[in-house]
Each structure stands twice: as structure tokens, then as C-alpha cells.
View 1 (tube, helix red, strand yellow):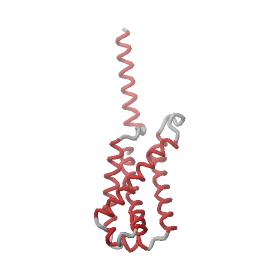
View 2: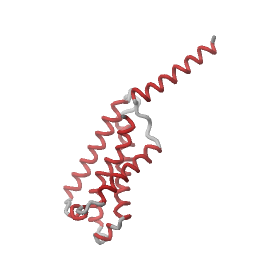
View 3: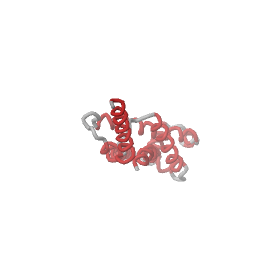
View 4: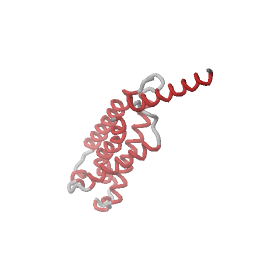
Length: 161
């Protein structure tokens, strides 16, 4: 009888886990697979923007105020995605505070977006087109980082729906 009771408890636990994953879609902990998915999402979105004909001319006209605005808007978009798509589904908010939940996801997603942007600029030799000017390279990287950040966040969105 005791053995039967332990099996019933085990099955009940497994059913609860399936319910949480399938119906409640409770966010799981951030894993290596999420990082890989974010990288490919960022790369796909970045590739679509890097080949825009006027990208270099537009990036070179960006002022410091424009760059900061792009960074702030990108940060707000990522924060919104992290909160509304992920954190609202967390059951125990005391155990998983938003700051901790947000920080590792935000730093990872935005870091991936910046690295992919920088990689694309160098991969397609755009740094030579703008004469290896560090400020111009920064302008181009920041301009491409916004769509890359959105692309990095898309796999998390798709996983929830």
C-alpha cells in the first residue's frame, strides 16, 4: 500500500509539471539553449538590416543623442518583453524577484545583440567602408543592435506561445 501511495504521488508530481509547462507556460530558468536561440534570432534579424542600402549613411548621421535614444528604446523593448512575456508567468515572485529575473536575461540578450552587430559590421567589411573610424563603427553597431536585440528576444516570445 505504501509503494502504491508513493507511485501515485510521483505520477501526481509529473502531471503537475506537465500542466505547468504546457498550460501555464511557466518560464523556465535561462539555459544555454536560450542563449543559442537568442544568437540565431539576433543573427537573422541583423542580416536583414545589415544589407539595407542606406544603413551606413543613416548610421553616420546619428548624433550622440540618437545613439542614447536607440539604446534606451532597445532597453525598454527588451525589458517589456522580459516582463510581459516571461515574468508575469512566474508563480513565486518572492523566490524569483524581477531584478534577478530581468538582469541575466537583459544582459545576455543585449550583449548578444551588440556582439552580433559588431560581428556583422566586421564580417561584411563595413568598418573599412567607413575608414575604421571608431565613432562611425559605434554608430553602425548601435544602429544594427536594435533589430538584433528584438531578434534575440523573439525565441523567448515564441517559446511562450
